[in-house]
Image (cartoon, rainbow, N blue to C red; front, side, top):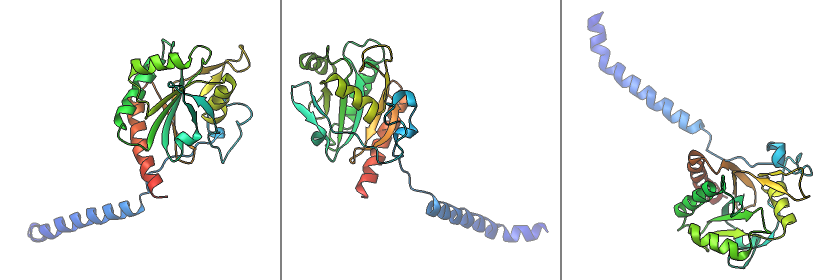
Length: 225
């Protein structure tokens, strides 16, 4: 018996290796390609979504907007046409989560500074405080690249509706003015068709790493279409 196993040991090893290779090939053939979800309002926590769109299940896209950036330039959807971008909401006088979020946006900016397809967009939730001049001072302090990253201000109602009806990332103040809101730490990843492809905790370094990887994946997915 021992002589039998010794005689066929080599063939057994070869057979085992071939089996591993064949199984690996089959796994790769049937392994689904990585993808990213397309978020609809019905998929998001209701506290972050305006009641008028909470039950929308398909065709959700970022609405057109008209805001003003740190240089006094008008910014619209046309500036983000055929671009992948990351959006968030902040205010320049925030001393809690905003500095961390902005620092992480700076890291994302650095990661994709040479890629014209990737842009950033930060909306102030206190437009009455964050004038163009204030945003410009903040941009200079943080090292914002004008061609890569817009810090925008504008009509409070429009910003509120963008946050809660388009990007789905802000909570309603509830007890303040009609358009008062509480911004969250959420970053939203937007594809070239104005659809939300991911939400990320802008204060979490690991979430930012995942965001960077998802941007790269989204670029590949967009290139196939």
